[in-house]
Image (tube, rainbow, N blue to C red):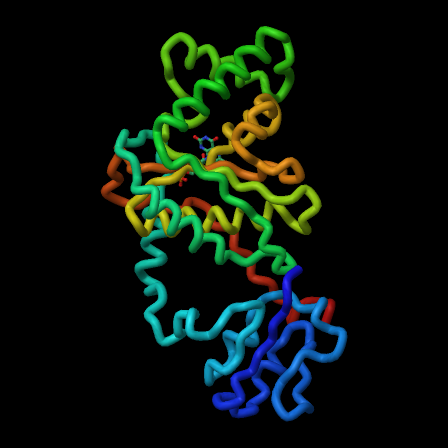
Length: 283
Ligand SMILES: Cc1cc2nc3c(=O)[nH]c(=O)nc-3n(C[C@H](O)[C@H](O)[C@H](O)COP(=O)(O)O)c2cc1C
């Protein structure tokens, strides 16, 4: 852990103590002239930067982050109608155009998606991205080779046996059920000892998905690729540059959709249960 580097610009601080009150772990001392970190408590900092964010004067910097580099809450945020439409109009894309997405746009989407919340603010989700078709083709070939080898060695059994059909259709017809011929992929990984690695990764990828869709890019949550990489093609983990102490938590493929859906689907059975404890015998 680097230095907390908690600094107050005393020419701006109005001593409103909002930083003191909002700190989730209560390590900011408000009894001093200007706010400061309580003696010996820096290690408790969650690095959430709420103190920096809540300061009305932009007087507080921490962990090397200065308020000038933040966006302001007066900036427009998502229109609820448009966001709802985005959610309703998003479809799983299984037919992709060959066109590649600009790597800098992919990078921007990935970096913004990683603003997603994480348990204990661990921020340990990592995205490993394939941003070009050539590397995607190599990965695709390698995964099917691993599966084909595992099938012939009798290593694919039980609940994974459908992978032998996937290998067959790939080897005989070049039909790619696992990656759907997508031009790009993002692999989420997180340290094996993270608090909630799968939840953290799923939230980050959900953000990735929404941002991608907002840019007109289609996505597919790829459970088959996840299972293939985790259960059959483990040997590729090193090649993909996934850290040894990380587990692959989810995979998403993406690219421009070759299919246009002129309308939304309709959610058949939303299960929203309203809890009413006030009328029950508990009360
Ligand atoms: C965790 C998860 C894993 C999925 N894995 C796959 C997959 O491996 N292959 C696939 O074609 N679709 C996969 N899907 C997509 C679902 O089948 C899809 O979301 C569902 O049919 C609803 O369709 P929609 O996303 O277009 O609304 C997955 C979805 C989720 C949430």
